[in-house]
Image 1 (tube, helix red, strand yellow):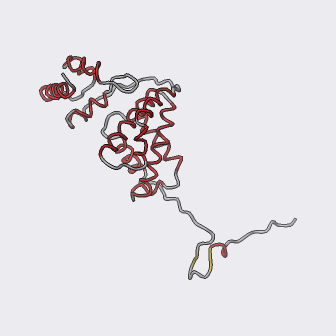
Image 2 (tube, one colour):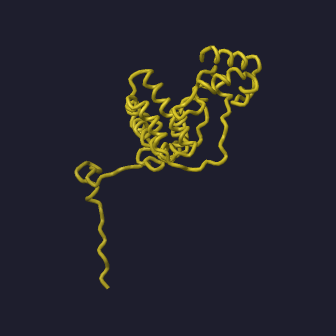
Image 3 (spheres, rainbow, N blue to C red):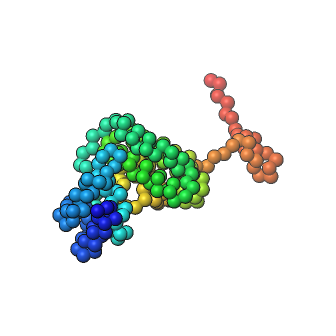
Length: 222
């Protein structure tokens, strides 16, 4: 028995039953053999069941029906060891947040992201901090390259807030980066671009500059 066999059985059962929503509880009740295999063999770096890996292997239509268990109360904590386990495992792939060379790089970047996102959602504030640092490399590149995101230039704090919001809200909707990109694109439509001027900029016929039109008011002498 291997993961391909188990996922095949799971997909087959899903086709037969066509549930509107899929969760870990549904798998326990309907495909217990698959659940036992997943529970034992498909684990994250911190030894939790890796449901993200499972859902990524399902047929696309079933991925959209996945419902992730929501923790009602998340107590913030700091655990550097958890974060280091992930970063050390993928230390040779951290460059993918600046540039990706091939599909393997994209896959590695997604794995790093999801691992840190799940730690952050558990409440590990260090995981969130590391994610913001890594994602800002990617987002800054997007802002420079893509027309629909250029409005975010100059709104550093707001961009960071959007990143944190996506980390909190992400369930399973496909690529996390795709989710973040679309969030920035849609929420950025009403942003007024920051205009940067220099007093040395030429005006009118180019003979004068902006500083020539600056009026300095002298304090009134009483």
